[in-house]
Image (cartoon, rainbow, N blue to C red; front, side):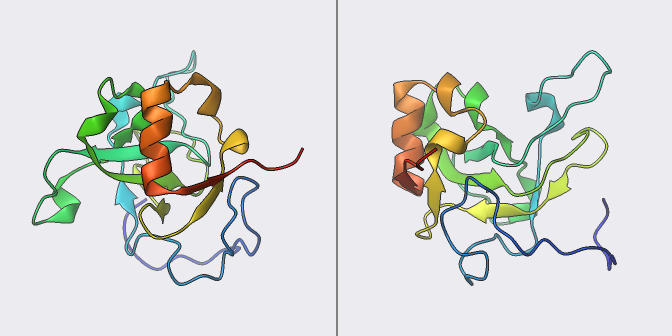
Length: 143
């Protein structure tokens, strides 16, 4: 999706994994983020989907131009201590290779995540989970 004005339905309820109120001013990254499609796995149909609640990260020194650095899928990072920024994809994306611009929930801003509802939580290593806890307030949601 290219930047511009779009008309459509606005989501007015929080995703099930988000513990912070959706009307909070600190919730999303202004202007959205650009995803690196190569870090998302293609399915049998060739599409590279990204579901709401997927963790994405930036590695290394933050760039002077934030738009010049794409966000990579966090679960694929072998050394999570290299992560400088962490965010969560807000909406489902059918194919990141076609539409790599999206809204994201900001890390380091006091946002609460229900970790047991994050789609990849069970597959994260202990080191990756520790890094997520440094960027977000983690809570276990009751089933």
